[in-house]
Length: 137
Image 1 (cartoon, rainbow, N blue to C red):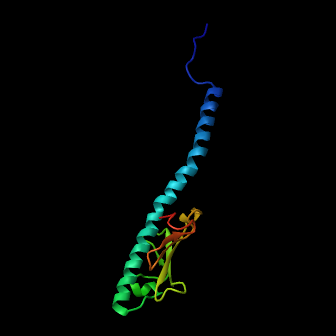
Image 2 (cartoon, helix red, strand yellow; image 1 turned 90 degrees about the vertical axis):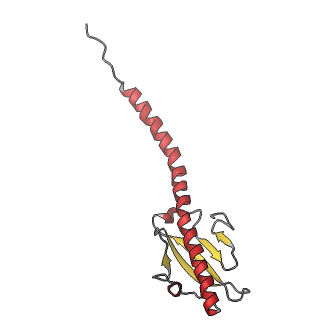
């Protein structure tokens, strides 16, 4: 008579693997959204820094610039500190005299963030994004 061997059957193992796969499929999108959301801080910091430099430039020259190299960045458009965003600057929309609009556009791997495809900051302090005013801030 043979003794009973301890262990898992193939069916028990397949059930555990199936449950783990279902949990992973449910959890991954939530995790990915949190990663995108945390990387947006890179864009926020860059936009606020560029706005501060624009205000300093305006104080010295009595005008804003659309060239980020004049603000001390190495390129135009500039790349954010962590490299997740490209920041560009444009003259303000008509109706606002002598203003600017800063726009952060995601780069790889952040370009999968379709909820907040662009994040903007204007000279009047309006924070908006492709998702709506203030949604990605």
